[in-house]
Image 1 (cartoon, rainbow over the protein chains, first blue to last red):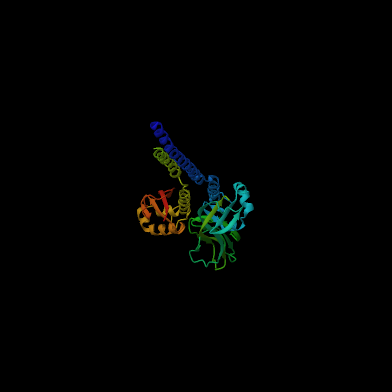
Image 2 (image 1 turned 90 degrees about the horizontal axis):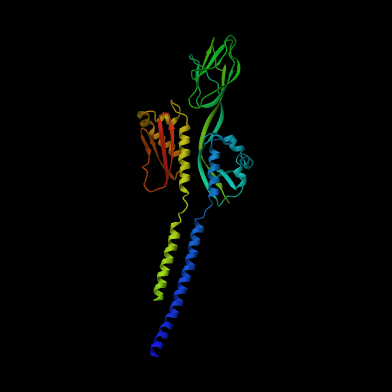
Length: 231
Length: 127
């Protein structure tokens, strides 16, 4: 009797403890599942928008981009013409996603609002061409060095009567030659890799004003191109 | 007795959860950006026209030991100007290096460009 009573007492004391233990275990399991779910969800990210931003930024600074003169050098006049329509036309990925392009914080083109998306920044140079005019007084050597480098120059030759300008050479290379005399305007290509010295060969005197040079001087400025994608 | 078992169970479950929470890596978004910076800096430097002679500015600088020693300050200033202010750099050339020593345990971006005088590597990292 007493033995049975002792056993029953023991089982009854064990029951609440088991219930509490199961309750605690269930609660912790639920809590743990919630934490794991949260951790996995926060690690989930959208690699698509990062890929769009990276590839669009690479495309914009590539040599064949509608903005660039050569790799990482943007042309300022083309930059001024650039807008969302051209962005969509040149890069179809921009039409399918919300992207925006900004240069030094100034928006250039955007096809949506990717404020919560990924941003990739690229370092670029912005190239500006200005037209410079020069009317040199040629010395006895008949040479003139252009103060700045450029892509091309337009020479306007108006020698006095009796003087034939037969040859014009740029940095030692013959750019123009005519035995009967050069008069009028000629365009000659220049190299941006070297400073150009123009040399004139003429049969008579060349007073100041008989040669006029117009060339496009290059000036570059550093800038940051930011491409954002997502939304 | 069962409370002890429950406590053991709780420890096991918490261990699993901790493993999931710390085992998931955080996205590394710094390195692609640093690689882009390094690549842009090398592209810009490698395409710059020379000041005196040679094909490009970079080739001119690393053409010889003397030219490198003469121009290293200018290269450093130019690279410093090209890169953003929060980025430090180191340039490795066949004649030596320019810039700051690379600290350990930071995310870096790297790009290499070849010139007629040898390869030039730029490594960049956030300050």
